[in-house]
Length: 140
Image: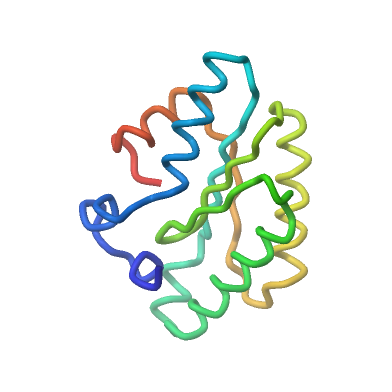
């Protein structure tokens, strides 16, 4: 995963096995067949490039702390996937309002744990953006 954080090209990272993508595809099927809710949250770190340029070691440490902070802020059934300058979080069984509460918790936990200002931007992806991400039309 270190290579993902270092910023591999989209084609290289796409070739890697992505368990989160498989889980999101399954969640989409369950939503269509059974009406089961899920939300996908994109977490981007706005200062990632600056921190990486200044000190790759500090970026690795900050990214690792942010990853653990997000994992500790969500439930055991939720899944966190790594991306070059951020994370993707699958929130299973939640509607948009419930997901906003989870986003608040993730944001607070990152602020508590990560000393470096990683400028976290957390956003729910709508259905169209999820489909584009699944089909490789957008890189998140």
